[in-house]
Image 1 (cartoon, one colour):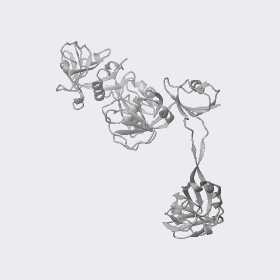
Image 2 (cartoon, helix red, strand yellow):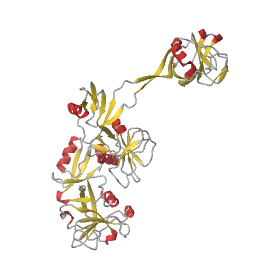
Image 3 (cartoon, one colour):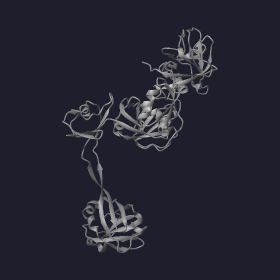
Image 4 (cartoon, helix red, strand yellow):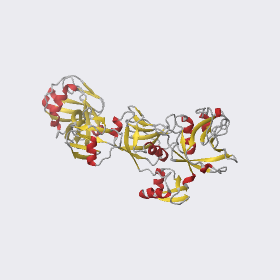
Length: 510
């Protein structure tokens, strides 16, 4: 039997698993990710009550609305092909005659503009005419019994005003819909056995919009391991909540169609990525960041907690934290020119880029990479579980919410280097209520932030000696939120002066 995986068709033996067939085709399945299986079923053709009428003046479409004569119409409508315009008045255009099996009636008929009926002239079914109303009027048309109004013109009503004697109906065709059977799409994994022809989807493809470069960084970050995890699902969207930020700048705003990808720019879910299963109205709280170009079957079948293999294009230019030479190699592969600044040696670590976003770099076709010596980069570990609000604040002010490296500016340091303080954001720090405050001693190399009960809320500090009285920002314990620690060598923090910039990278908690 034939099976298609991501559009590539292959003959397989019944009972083969998705994983086996994928391996046969060289398709790599992402560990722990779902696949979508769509049964290849015959499309059911359903005849509708819509009919397309071609005339010498153009095409129109009618919809039959009188069920009593549907079968009689279906057996006779073709006879109107080739019939000419029998008469035309300011009220109606009339084509025919043809022979039908309808039984005439003497009931009066009132037709609105655009409505249609059949007229059995002289109460004879051998003189059946098709009447197209041009304006509201009444007449003794002798219609079929129980069907004074046959239906209405739903497209091309203007043509009735253009008819002239000599015009004719050239063709009438029923409009046929195709429908796929219910239950054709299911959620599965690599162990699913293929026992009938199916189409398997393993990857979701997302194309980013250059008009939302900052939001694009959120999508890259959320799918940085090649998969997007579904945290929430409704009938309208699936959402990924891996990235949390305080807020984002407003970027592209538009109607959210099916397959649209957005990033929330404000509110409690700021930083969440949304993939739309059905349309939604424009809202200022969502930036349009791209669209799904293939693989929507995966979004349709995914459940909360599932992971979906995801490919984001254009490819991310993730050079922060790499060496200048590694950055040059990556950029060159994508046709992007590298401009080195700071430490330009091959071994220097890239800590800043300009433009700062991948989409901005593609647009400019060049990137300035600022390098520093590896020993100058401070590695930290943040306590996300213990101090989630304070950690989110720290990531925001350093830039770690969107990038692999962040920076802090020295505000104050003591001559004996007991502590070093860094500038924060006083306005943003108003939300920093006490959390994870010290109970006993504060160990050396601990990272902290002053909370909102103190005057200098938002100040970030590192303490280089143990203390049983003061936190990393020289505040008493009740005014200190412990947010992390320095990992490894702290030499990069020694001998600093005011306004000196310190670059940091985050080591994830194990």
